[in-house]
Length: 166
Picture 1 (tube, helix red, strand yellow):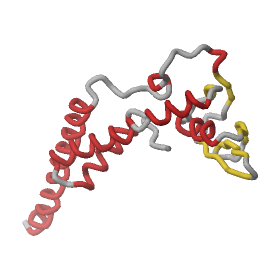
Picture 2 (cartoon, one colour):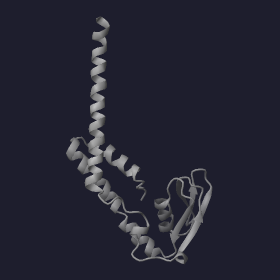
Picture 3 (cartoon, helix red, strand yellow):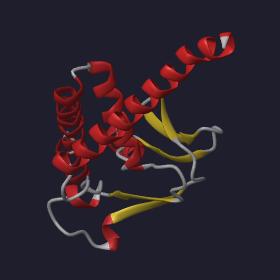
Picture 4 (cartoon, helix red, strand yellow):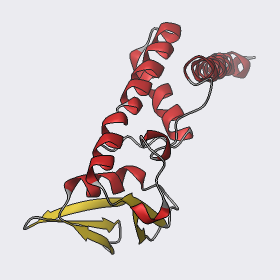
């Protein structure tokens, strides 16, 4: 009988955690339905003003690992996490664009040759910030907890592979 009384509070905590998890998943599902009824825009293709031909791109093979860039003497070198060089450029825009489009398991980078096109696409990419804020606000209205709302928004962004590098 003593053992049962000691186990009772533990059982209540387990039950409480399960209801919180269910509510978290319901809020997440609701936020997706309300904020992303048509899914997420695909970067970069849906952010270009015009249709581009294959000849309008520079193509670089990658290792499929996350990328970063380093600046040295006026040149940006785009590297993967093992420090393998992907390409070098004088343009910060091209380097930033490469980081935005690079995803896990992506083996070919297609970067427009015209920097004006890159610049306009990156400016339109503010969509991701607005989307994250919209998801957070929606989740906060349901949970009344900013920490939980941010966590929900981050999970949704990760689930849809929306890259927040800018």
